[in-house]
Each structure stands twice: as C-alpha cells, then as structure tokens.
Image (cartoon, rainbow, N blue to C red; front, side, top):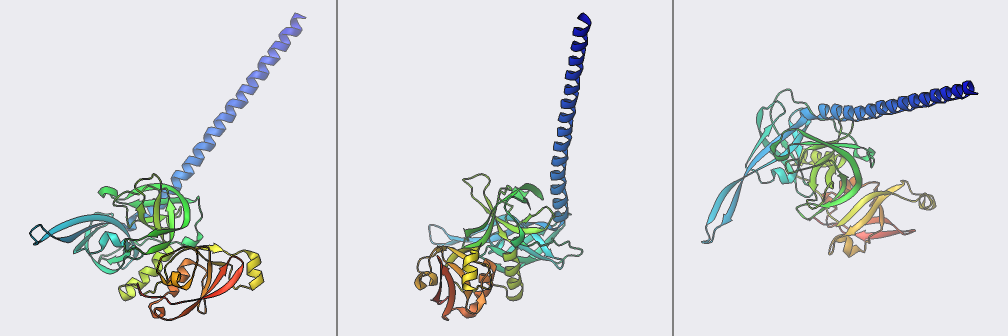
Length: 351
C-alpha cells in the first residue's frame, strides 16, 4: 500500500505540474497576442501619421483689430493667431478653417522642414468654416484625400495639428458618430460633420483628420470645451466641393433653404412601393425659423429625395444642387413624410 500511495502522489504532483506548465504557457501566449495587437495598433498610427505629416502646416496670422476707445477714436491693435492646415495639391493649395485666416492681413505658413512661406487667401467660406490659401514653394507633398462616405463609426481616427504651437502633434481615437450638424460662426448649419474623440486643442483647427491609411477624411474644426472627448471635423467630401468652388470663384455661390439634415437610408418597402430610383435621402433634423423651409411647411422627420429633377441621395448632393441660380425661383422638393410621398413648393433664397 505505501508504494501505491507514493505512486498516486507522484502522479498527482506530475499532473499538477503539467497543468501549471500549460497555464503558464497560455498566459505567455496571451501576453504575446496582446503585445502583437498593441504593436499592430501602434504601427497603424505610426504609418498613417508618417504618411500625412509632411503635408501638415502651421499657420500664423496677423490681423488688425479696430475698436473705438472711450473718446470715440479708433484704436488699431494687431492681433495674432495660429492654426493648422494641410497641402492638398502639390502646387501649393492649402485647406484650413475659415476662422483661422478670415480677415488676416498677413499669413505665414511653416512647413514640416521648418521653412516659412508667405500665403495668400484664395477663397473663404464662413458658412462651412473652410478656406483655401496658397503658397509658392518647390517639392511640396500633398495629402491623399479619402472618401468620407466610406468611413464607419468606431474606425480609427487620427488628428494632426499644431496645438498651442507644438508642431505636428498627433492624437488618436475613433470616429464617434457621423452626420452631425454644427452651427458655423456665420450662423449657418454645417451638415455632415464627423464626431471623434481624437483630442483637439486650440491650434488644431484646420488640420487633417486621417484614417489608418493616412488618407484625409475630415478637416478638424471645433471642440465642446465643457466636455471631454467630443470633437468635430468637417467631412472631406464637403471640403472637396467647397475647395473647388473657392479655387474657381473665390467664394461659394449658393442658395439657402434653412434646414439641418443627415443622409439616411429609406425603408426598402417605401423604395419598392414608390419605385424610387435611390435608396437614400436627407432626413430633416432641424428647420430654421422664418427660413424658406419653414415657409414651405417642411417638417422635422421629412426625408428629401429630390430637388427639381435632380435626385438627392446625400447632404453633399443638396449642397451641390442649391446653387445661386435657384435663389428666388420656385422649386419642387419630393419628400417622404412618414409613409407618404408628397411634393413641396419652396423658394430658396440667398443668405
């Protein structure tokens, strides 16, 4: 019996040792897998930032602030400001925020290599808080522009800018939400706004928000100062359209109907019942008082599917179609209200 007891004890000890070895090996494998995942995340951020950073610039401006003193005399003080931007064309065109450069008398751009260049304003659009400036320099590297219609909530988002003058600062987070609306300094609602938790600070304005491939998906614009982790960027598809208008005309020619909206899918039963040519439209999320939309009877919850003879499948479509020549002319909107398809007569106006 003592021999049998000893044998059983030895076998049990061996089994426990074997289990301990396997658990230890599993823990080591887990550590390796965690390290690999973290390394993959780091490599994604490093690669994307390395690709986009050469196009990111620091913008310093000077503007005259003319105010009347107590004696009614005009005092002129020079105000200084700073922000970010990025080169989007190799011939020196730079995209930034309107509030960064609006009213500037002097603009100086600093590239990643430290060289400084004087810039001129090509066009400015306060209604979307976007502006295009230009420098003259050789061998400029332009950022690759992505497609903001292809981004998804939860995907990696990386912000690059110059907060408080610290050049090429990189922060990373995720896309928190899409299709937000944000009121610009001119009072107009900007649609198709990207919400992210990639940290932004004063000086980040105008810099790029990029994806894991280093493609620009938004132009960093604003933060809610009382909150943490709520930051906003203007979708790059909106910025592409506005930049083209600014380069061509120096301003954006548009009419105005007075809604806030977001792109939404239309229920497939409604699409089939009315034989709609597109499965997306614009959900009206807000109607501004005393606006053309308010006068025409447009309501929150309506889905706009066409304007005139043109389909409206996204916010960008509506912005593109509300041209200056529609102002003052009666236009038909095709709208889905609950389950009914109705027509609304509206007269856009220039704001």
